[in-house]
Image (cartoon, rainbow, N blue to C red; front, side, top):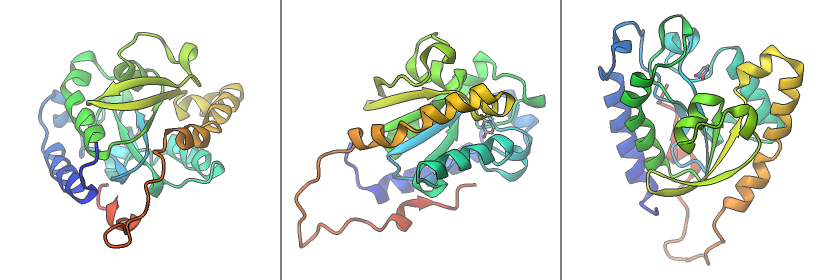
Length: 221
Ligand code: URA
């Protein structure tokens, strides 16, 4: 931890280019474009979904369809916007017909997510649904069982709090699910607050923090 944000951002840009040209699994042949993820390259909070769907594949951005609109609303309800967080997926390419990601595809794509986490250095990773939860917790417990329960893990060599919640698409399917999702979402500010490092004394000479805008990845999808 602790590498300068500008340096990590540069490497994230290189990784973005690499992902655009990725052919590690057969999904490259059917995708319109890879969806790297987008948001703040130095975010404390990262969301990890499943895979791009039709609209994401068309636009090259994560969560731009109906589930994405719900995600935006839920973020707004806790006082956050997309620019404050980083949003990525387990798979960077769309599985045809939005079928479930296959184990070989997850395995092939995993190094990209690991590297994103290594470079962004989030303190809290909110996993959306089963696929990202199982991948990052390295456990087989399903989302129904573990949602709303923060777990401490080391991912990409970094200590992170993983917070599994239902996938927003599930919230679109049932009112009960939406209520649970909303309740779980409401705990995010408190988790983020608890995960923040203690304030370091300000150094008048060189202590001015990098402006937020400079570390945002608007160009990424
Ligand atoms: N569902 C996901 O898991 N990811 C997206 O980017 C869009 C929908």
